[in-house]
Image 1 (cartoon, rainbow, N blue to C red):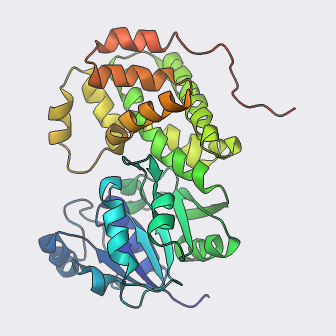
Image 2: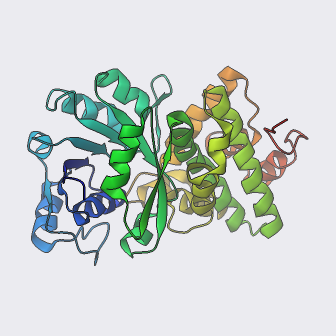
Length: 338
C-alpha cells in the first residue's frame, strides 16, 4: 500500500464531494473546501452533503472547511473542482499557501472567458513550478455516489503524476486510466457540455433514435476537429474523456446541460431555466466562447453555430435544428490512418 496523502479538494459541489470521499475512503486525509459555512458545518455534523448528495455517507477522514489556508495546510495534492469562472481566483489564492512540490489537479470541465484558457493553462500561468494534471471522463456524481462503476482519465505531462492520481483514486467502483494528452482530455470534458444541450433539445423534439445517433456522431467529429486545431490528439476522443463522456452527458437526465437542452426544446426561456438550477451548467458559458474561437480559427462547426443561433439570436428551435443537421460537410470520418 502506498503511503497516505494529505489532500485538499476545493469545491463542495456534487463532483468535488464524491471525489473527496473516494480519496478519503482509500485511506487519505482530505479537507473539502467550500464557501458556504452553513453547509460546511452540516457536512461535518451529519457526514453528508445534504444539499447536493443526500444519503451519501462521507468518510470520517474527510472534513469540510471554509478557511482556504486551513484546507491546504500541509497537503501534498490539491484538486480544484470550482466553476470555471472562479477557477483562476481560487488558484491564485492557493498559490501563496502551498509549496512548489504540491501536485495540482483540475476537475473543472470548462473554459475561461478571457483568452479562451483551459484550466490546465490557468494552473500553468498561476503556479508554473507545480506539477499539474487534469481528470475527466463520464462521471455523473450521483451514480458514483450510488456505488455504480465509473471510469475516469488522468492526463498530465509525466507518468509520475498519472501514477500518483491513479493510486489516490482507483477503487473497485472508480477506475482510473492514464493519458498524456492534457489538452485532448480537457477539451473533451469542456466541449461535450455544449453538445449535451443539443441532445436535450433533440430529446424534447422527439426526433428519433436515428437522428440522435447521427447527432452524437457529428458532435464527436466536430469537437475533435476543433480540438486538433488546439493541439490535441484526435485519438483521445475515442476514449473515456471523448466519446465516453459525450455519450453519457448527451443521454442522461442527471446531466445539467442535457436538462437545459430539454427545457429549451420545450420552449422555456433560458433565463428561467438557469434561475431554477442549483449548480452551474458549464455548456452555456462554453458555447459563446467556443463559437467565437471557432470563427477566429475558421473551424467548421455547424452544430455550435446552430445552438448559438437558438440561444443568442432567438431563432426558432425547430428551424435552426433542421438547418444545422443539413449543413455538415460530406466527409464522414474526420481523421483516418493511412
